[in-house]
Length: 138
Image 1 (cartoon, rainbow, N blue to C red):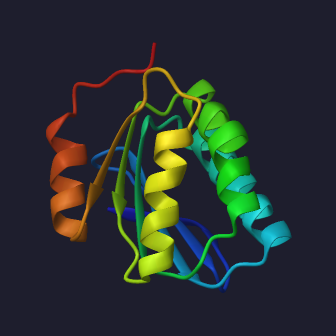
Image 2 (cartoon, rainbow, N blue to C red; image 1 turned 90 degrees about the vertical axis):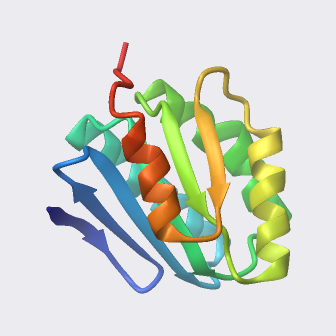
């Protein structure tokens, strides 16, 4: 069962109560200040729900600026890990430039224990995320 936690023109955050993960759905080109604000909304949702897994559907997301992916790698990913995220499944964008940025962010991310995997399809990403249901928050 999915419960809506947040929604605007660029991001929807839903809580999958049965499998205990957040489902993020990104859309369009997101200006830098809004991107960072939305990233903070995700952290708030993690802290509210106490989930330790995120499924990020980036299929319809457009270009991420180098400043934003650098910020995400050095600030958002460590904060997400600190907030309890242990696994993140990403459905890659259909935008070629965004795909490159997504992989760059993950390679740059300052994290030690979070598992991140990329997928082409949402169902495969969800299967991977829920197959590891024994992941616990320390």
